[in-house]
Amino acid sequence: MNIKIKFGKRLKEIRNKKKITQEKLSELANIDRSYISDIERGVKSVSLEKIDQLAKALDINIVELFKF
Image 1: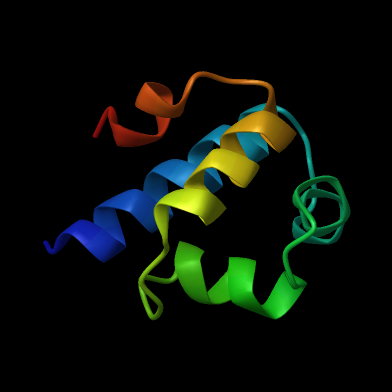
Image 2: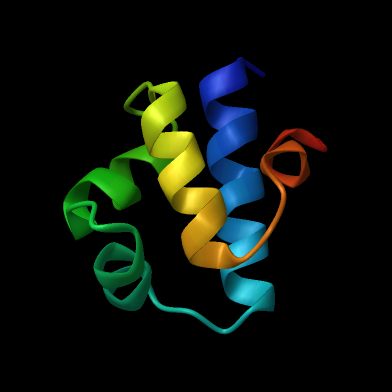
């Protein structure tokens, strides 16, 4: 399994545990909902800046997104 898929699955896992929809995460992170969907499906690569935005929106440490 490649890193994009692993990262996407982890992002979705954390988002679901926190009961946050893709739409809500989109608002909190200021990232388009379709882009979040693409990340979660392992279709798109994600920049460090976007990873930081996602971590802040989820109120987690960045390292949590890489525990897969």
